[in-house]
Length: 347
Ligand code: KG4
Ligand code: ZN
Image (tube, rainbow, N blue to C red; front, side, top):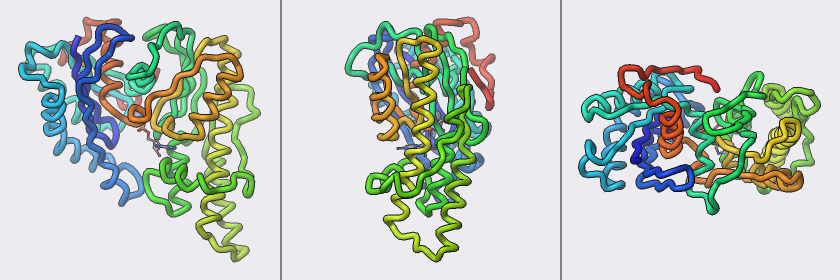
């Protein structure tokens, strides 16, 4: 089937067109992402009302470009299903995508399915991988983004169980806040990982929070505060915050933040006896996390999957694919009248 995906949950306006025969036969015909990151950078983070305004300005253009790129001439004949992110995310931003999707579904009389953004991240692991994704269940998902840090067990398509999550800040949020402390701008993840390359992670040892706790939950506010105190102490001593010192702090932070993710994910994978570990979410673009988790999985004889770099951050291809699975589960709800916004949607 041919599915149109629409994503507006945060600061990316995205529309994609996918042909899906089965989970191992997926063709991405168009994947258009219009990022607002430069606009929000001025404010040091995403401003929901501005995000909504930009989605309103951009969605029609992004939609038209996606159809053109996919070569869709007759929407009514060629598109079988529309999938739109209905949560979790920023309410005002979500509403723009939902309202647009409802209009298109109504005009063309097409089924419309509301899609969970986090499930989208999970399914980004099925898109354009070098080898077919088969025999992976039971699997454990580590989903790391700007708003979420979650460990989710998956026994089959559409079968999820949340086994761990953050108690306070999400890991992406911690990257963004620490980047701000270091004067690196928004978004913080890419900026920190870039300068950390030239840094010494052993110079300023930072705590890996909750590493020793028995459960599978995470906490990042303490690590962020540790960086704040470190900077304050350096200032009191009259030390200069030169480029090398910044790089060393970035490297230490990145090391501490990823260590706890890797260790807890492996521990949970053993406890729940899964076959595969899957990484996803915006922070899955982090090179150190990708390398360390991959190595740890292999050292423990676990299969391992991570999304292609272009599908790590928000996009609509993953939403179309998640919509495919949601539609397989429940075709009845796929009518535009029954799609609503769920800003705090969970698993
Ligand atoms: O999934 P995503 O695109 O949006 C949400 O659903 O939140 O994730 C965005 C988050 C931001 O916090 C950003 O700083 C982080 O992903 N991020 C990274 C990297 N690239 C993006 N964090 C660490 N290292 C990166 N290379
Ligand atoms: Zn996301």
